[in-house]
Length: 165
Image (spheres, rainbow, N blue to C red):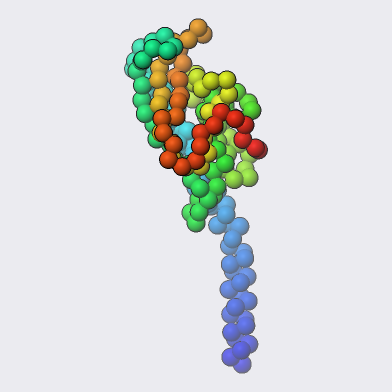
């Protein structure tokens, strides 16, 4: 009789764990999405404050700048894998005033920053890890822009190349 009870207990526990895993994965992806959305908003807000409070200088000259630290989570117990965070559009799709990101296997999302980012020919793509970025206000031929450059890289590279979808 004890063996039957033990077997039933194990079966019920396995069924409960199996039923809860999709909800746990969804919660991890939601948490990571919220963290990346907050990072994109903080980056956008910092760039907007820079434009609102300072005067731009010609490209190549030293102008007003701010430093922003962005951390993209690796897969873990509480977080899903952040595929990337990109500044200046999504990888392979330039949009100068957008910050994009992607969580695990979900579709990419974009946040309109309301300011033009200057990252070079392609969007600046950040992999999971901690990144320190320098935002500098510049005047370009087409108007005012915020130049974004990586200052340091603790873990995970910042690239200008395409990231697989």
